[in-house]
Length: 105
Image (cartoon, rainbow, N blue to C red; front, top):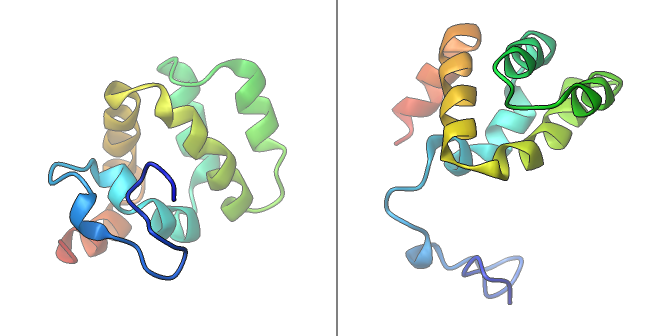
């Protein structure tokens, strides 16, 4: 078992998830699958120094939005500030997606 409270791949124990889980963490899978404006998001993350130029170039080189988002998420693990900036960008560039996900709370 991992430190995430999952007892198996098919039977996650959601009772151990933090109540104040960040939106970006809570909806990671849906964001990876549904975000389409990845290049614009990357531009802003680079400008705001959330990601470094080398990582930016590597992520941009990925062929699909899905692959880009999968590579981006580990960069957001640096801290809550990174996730907050990413979320703020998403609310502007992917507002309909974010609105849809917020309804699922």
